[in-house]
Image (tube, rainbow, N blue to C red; front, side, top):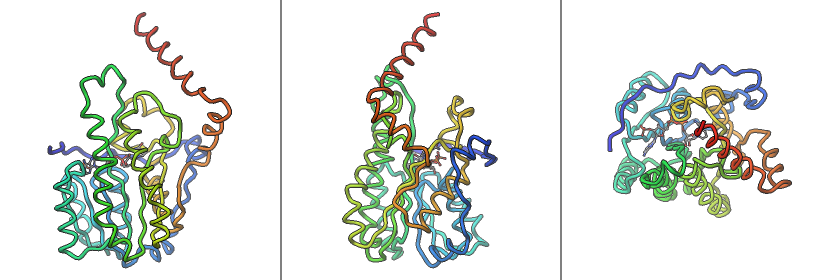
Length: 296
Ligand SMILES: NC(=O)c1ccc[n+]([C@@H]2O[C@H](COP(=O)([O-])OP(=O)(O)OC[C@H]3O[C@@H](n4cnc5c(N)ncnc54)[C@H](OP(=O)(O)O)[C@@H]3O)[C@@H](O)[C@H]2O)c1
């Protein structure tokens, strides 16, 4: 299935005082970033839009080989043109991560070009917010999210893992902070698929690390991108800027920490431990309120 070509969401990257407080990501030290990436081959999935595109554009200023993967050929080709005068080398591959055959083709292409990956950034993602009643005839929502956010990335990662192992590389997963929080209605397809990959990777992590591979996860909050801003309600919620999201990922490349998560994330987790079921009860109240409004 061919996606529509749309323009990317233009984030002005300004942050309100509250957003500065909630998401204090320091800028990246360019020298340290250079030392961490120079000469490396970096595969970014979902490089055509949003966080992935900005990440690719930022890394393109360094002497790296970028391997950019997404479905929208035109956007990838445009990036290649934009990078023509930059320090990097670029390979772009149109691949739908929901399609096993397309991933096999990508793996064959990487192998025939002898591209072994040092840093794998699992960034491509599909998000859906849909409640129960609207989901009854939409089994495909769950299938698409699972394929994009879980099954496809597992297939791709297993295929490139021998190269990453040889190079003692780094796997960075772009996840969502909701994965660490109690579940929320409407997000079943998205959250379950993000949680599945997170769990898969964390099960693998001790063996990967033992084999010399670093594993990091960015548990991002709401970020202003095409994915989130499609939902009007999100426009007024505190959100991280795209630049900060990219900086949090670049900082993981540099410091190789296991996690990025907002500093306050422990508070809701603690609250849920102290008062189990609180979030669940609040959601029930919310649903009742919503139904009362719908009747009047
Ligand atoms: N935005 C947020 O609030 C937020 C919060 C937490 C975590 N995240 C995570 O951040 C990551 C990046 O999202 P974003 O906000 O930058 O969204 P975005 O602007 O919509 O970008 C998503 C990227 O994934 C690619 N993609 C989607 N389906 C694909 C498929 N089947 N095969 C290959 N590539 C596919 C898209 O490219 P094509 O359409 O060209 O294929 C696009 O490049 C995602 O993993 C998301 O879950 C986002």
